[in-house]
Each structure stands twice: as C-alpha cells, then as structure tokens.
Length: 112
Length: 111
Image (cartoon, rainbow over all chains, first blue to last red; front, side, top):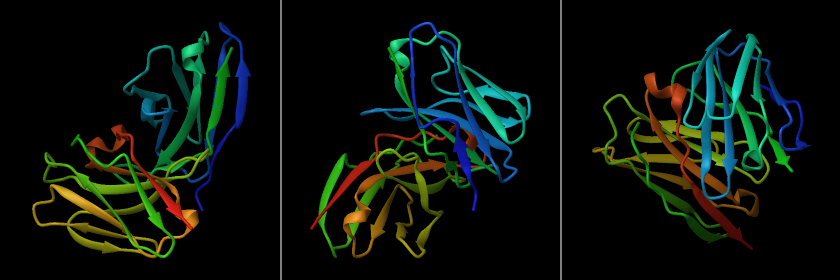
C-alpha cells in the first residue's frame, strides 16, 4: 500500500512564525501536491511538484512556498504565518497523469 | 478543466442504494471522471474512475451516459460507515497535476 505521511496531525503556531509542514511518500511517485481545505471551499491546490526541485503554483500559492530536495519528500513553508492560514493541510502523491491521488492524513494548523 | 456540479447533501438509510449525480457539461474528449470519498479529519480516498458506459468495483459503480455530460456514482446497500463527503472530478492526463476538488456531496446515512 502507498503510504503518505505528514509530520504532524495538529499544530499551533503564532502569527509571524515560520512554519514547516513535511510530507513523505514511500512509493516513488513523481508528483506531489499540497492542498488546503476549509469549510465550504473544498480542497484548493496550493503548490505541486512533478520532479525533484521542480514546482508549480496551484490556485492559491500566495503566502506559501515549497521545497522538494528529494523525490519522496515535499515540504510546505509558511514564511510568516497569519491567522487566515489556519486550515487543514493535505499532502498527496500520484505516479503521474490523471491517476489516483494518495492523500496523507492531514495537518490541522491553527495560527493564533 | 471541466467544471462539475453535484448536490450539496443527501440523506439515506442503511441498506439503501445511494446515487449521486455529477454534471460536467463541458467535458472534453480526453477527460476521465473520478470520484473520491472523504471521512472527517482524513484525506480523500479514491473510489472509482471511468471514461464511458459503466465501471464497477468492490465498493461502487459509475454510470456514464453516451454524451458523458453527467455521471452517477452508485453506492449499493450503504451502511453508517459510508457517511462521508463524495467528490466528482473531471480531467485528463495533461490536467492531472491541477485537479480541482469542488465542495462535494455530503452523504448522511441514517440507521
């Protein structure tokens, strides 16, 4: 089974802090994604990566950056956390194309 | 990416069949239709994918009419554990990296 893990299930940070969310997948997938999910808004794509050191902006990249130094790991960075970034963050991976996306359990981030 | 429209919510009872219809009027020739299920506090989970006619697996069936402008996810004999949000997505190989999850359909199964 494909496994996608995220570093934390729950995280509480203060406004202005730099926040790192880590995601690791164990199936050698090419593509990795970061989404945020808010009530009534569904999942929105923040960034995705189709190869090591490659990244593309999704629908809502403002206030976020990403890093993919190794194929199995994709990090989401909040350079200066703000209260409007309080959300559930979901990481996913896929071998490519319009194939099944495998999601991690999510990180519920609260910014105070 | 084709825009999808699905009902916001549906109620059902244990043992019944649940059918969720998704509209995708501007579906393109190369687009596939995929459904995901999401339980509270978990990431979405792939259920089924199809291109045309009917696809069936161990958990669901997907019915796609000839014009492909809509599709229906069918969950046979639901149980309480099928209470979840169900998302319909449409896209092709090129769009695979930019999937758009809408609001989904919240299905509540009652005893």
